[in-house]
Length: 242
Image (cartoon, rainbow, N blue to C red):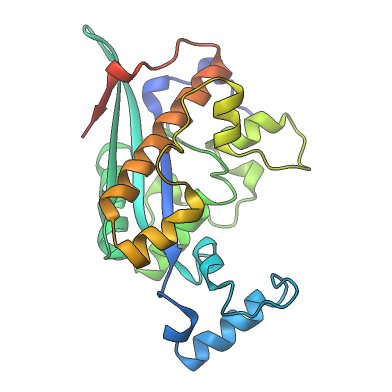
């Protein structure tokens, strides 16, 4: 976080976000032969004893080359005469290009200024580059806030609660769920968790359920960030779902 003082960042200028991704196809068998060969090469180092590349195809969701974005949750803190509100909305659907374009339109229309920052948990390693890569695949011009091509994670001028929690320690990963429990923040994992998104999508096709889960993660992300700032947390009564 070189050059960024958390206390000096305007909360109203932070775009809290979370994305949900799934494999590009329902199963390994649905891939054509070229894509099967490419996945086999990618998965070679991921296999455990007695596993096949088909067995771990669900892990394709975490790779932008083999997955797709089905939901983007966005949250904003707004302060006015009626107090502080947290407005959260999700963009979701089967058509990845449409989902990404809606999000790009939002960033281009409302948040194109340099003063705005994106904030996600593990965003610098996952959410930000994943969104940028999938926009490129879908032929969508990158919004200014996602034009981070060629930058190293520590050069990306955005906020990452995982990075903030590490305090320079790069040896371990701490989940948002763990931080929520640590800070006694109501956990978003009361319905599904990230490991279930693929099955909820491909088997149940319950996009509404995934979108609700994504919005809960965005709210938890904002609450964790406010803990880092030592500020009053967001109450359920102050949350507005668009």
